[in-house]
Image 1 (tube, rainbow, N blue to C red):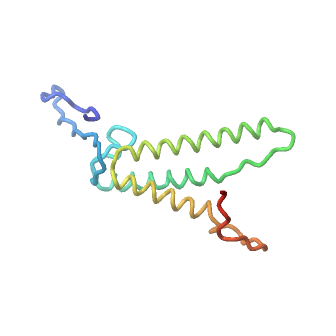
Image 2 (image 1 turned 120 degrees about the vertical axis):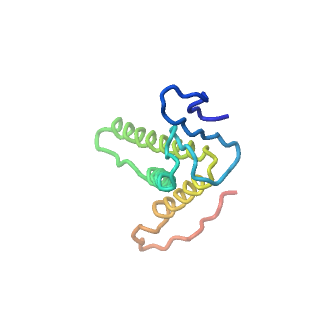
Image 3 (image 1 turned 120 degrees about the horizontal axis):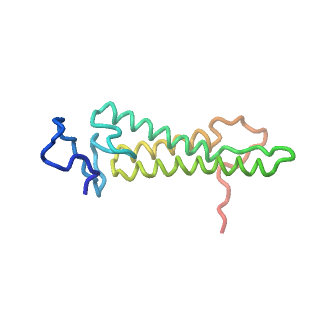
Amino acid sequence: MDHGGNMSTGNSTGMAPAKRVMMHMALYWGKDVWVLFADWPGFSLGQYILSLIVIFIGAVLVEWLSFCKVKRMKGSPVLTGFLQAVLYGVRVFFAYMVMLAIMSFNLGILFAAVLGHGVGFWVFGTQFLRKPSPAVEPVLKECPG
């Protein structure tokens, strides 16, 4: 199974035949990968590293959007609800894009996404960047059950 490309052996345009990329059905290493779009990131190491950075930033962005809150506006609960829905939709869009990138089965893309989610949670989901509160809270709360 492949992603398309130039299927014919003869090329009437006089251009070099397109490089074919096989769709992997198992995890693999390598820079020759298509992530989200055909021919992206291309076939050079620099473009592959750029795609790893983009996926990392996308995963951090998903975590940041997970912890964003919309402040209630006085006298306009409909507008507040609409803004919450838009924020949720944007977060889900980026989460699906990261998930689809992982479905390329490339281990570098997988590790970039997992690392991005971890760093994003560490920065935005923990007390790392927040001002310390005067009251000391327990580090681990009891689990239900």
